[in-house]
Image (cartoon, rainbow, N blue to C red):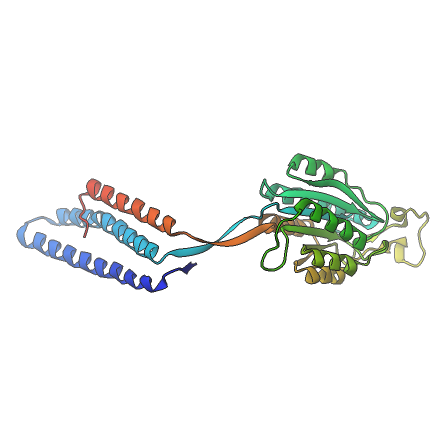
Length: 331
C-alpha cells in the first residue's frame, strides 16, 4: 500500500494522544469513585468489569480516528482485475507417452483433471481455448467463455502419435492473436493473452522447433507458461507406440518416456512466462489451480480513500452505539 500524501500520516500521532487522555480521564473517575463510595469487595469487582466493557466505545472511537486520519493521506492499493478481452489457450501434449502411469492414474488423466480445475477458477469473462498436439496440432475448442464446452473438449483428449511442440505453439499463438484482436499491449509489451503449455516429453515431430514457436509467441507479446509433466522413471511398453513384441534395447521391453523440462523452461523464459515441474497428480493440479487464480489478470493501482473513510464512519457509529448500550463515555 502507498499513499498520495504520506506526510499527512504524521497526524496519526493524534490517536495515541487521545488514548492517553482517555486513560487519564478514566483514572480520575476511578479515584473519585473510590474516595466517595463505600462499596464492598464484590461490588468493586463488578464495577471493574463494567469499566472494562465501558472501554469498548473508546477503542472503537480510536480506530475510527485512525481510519479517518489514514484517509487524509490518500491511500492507494494495487487491485487485480481480469484483463480486457483476456484469452487463455490450454495447449496440451497428447502424444503416446501420455499413457504412462508414473503420474496416477495416467499422465493424460492427471492433466485433464488439472485443466478442468483451471477452467473452473478462471474469471467468468476470460475466454479459454483448448488445443491438443501430438504429431500435429488440433484446435478442439476455440476461445470461449462457455465452460461446459471446455469441459467437453477436455474429455475428448486421447493420447496418440508423436510430439510437435513447435507446431502446437505456432497454432496457439495464432489462436490467441485472433481472439484478442487489436487489444493494446501493456507497459511490458504483452497483450492480454497467454498460453499454458503442458508436455511430457521432447519434440519428435513437426516443422517448427520449440524455440521457433517461442519466438513467435514473444513477437506477438504472448506469455507462455509451461508444465513439464512426468517423472524420469516413466516407461511404456512397445504396444503403446504401435509396435508388437518386447525385449529389444530396453530392459523388460519397455521404453523410457522422460519429460523435457529444459526445453519447456527455455520456452517460458523467452516469452516472459513461468515454468513448472509436475511429478504427481497433486502437483499438476496445484500448478493449474495456481495459474487459474492469477493468469490473464492485470494489476492496477487505485486510490482507496473511500474505503478508509467508510470504515471510519462505520467505526464511529459503532462507537456511539456501544456508548449508548454500555453507558461508556467517549473521550
